[in-house]
Image (cartoon, rainbow, N blue to C red; front, side, top):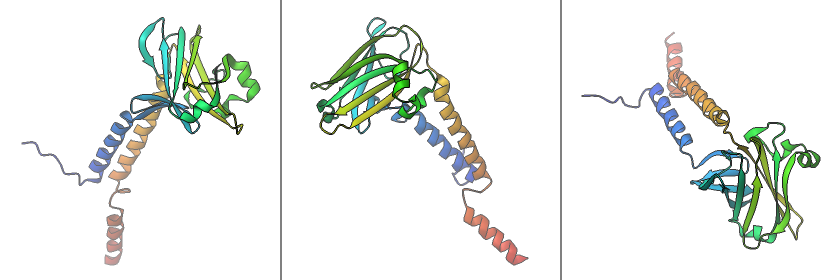
Length: 221
C-alpha cells in the first residue's frame, strides 16, 4: 500500500504551492499578452486605453479558415478586424498604423518606447486615416512582404473632448520568438526554486516556531 505523505513538511507544502502556481500560469485566462492585445477566456481582445474590442487576424490567401491573435505565421496578405465591445468607440474616430520594430523592442513595447511622432512616422509602413465606424467594426488589409517584428498602433479620437486613447501591440510576422514567452516561465521557475529552498530552511513556514525554539534555548543557557 502506497502512503501519501501529509502536507506537514515545509518543503512539501512549498513544492505543492509552486506546482499550483506554475499550473495556474500555464492555464491562465490571460496569457502571452502583447501590449494592448491579450487573450482573455480564449477570446482575443484589444484594449484601447479603457475601451475594449475583439481583435482577430486572418490570412485569406494562406489559411483562410484560421484566426490569429497577434503573431502572424506567414508573410502574406493579412486582414485585421477590430470589433468594438465598448459602444463609446462608435462615436470616436479611429486610425490604424503599422510600423516596423526598428529598435527590436519586442513584446514589451509601449508608446513611450517608440521615440515620438517623427520616429513613428519614419518607421511606418501603413497608415489608415481616422474615421468613424458607426457599425462598430474596423477592417484593415495589408500585404506583408518581409518577416520580422512589427508594432500596431490604434488611436481613438474623442470628437467632443479632443482626448486620444491609444493601444500599442507588438507582433511578429513569419516567426515566433519563443524566448520572449519562455523567459517569463524561467523567471517564475527560478523564483519557485528560491521559495522552495527558503521553505526548506524554515524561513517561510513556521517562523514563530523557529523563534520560540531559539528563545527556549537561550533560557536553558
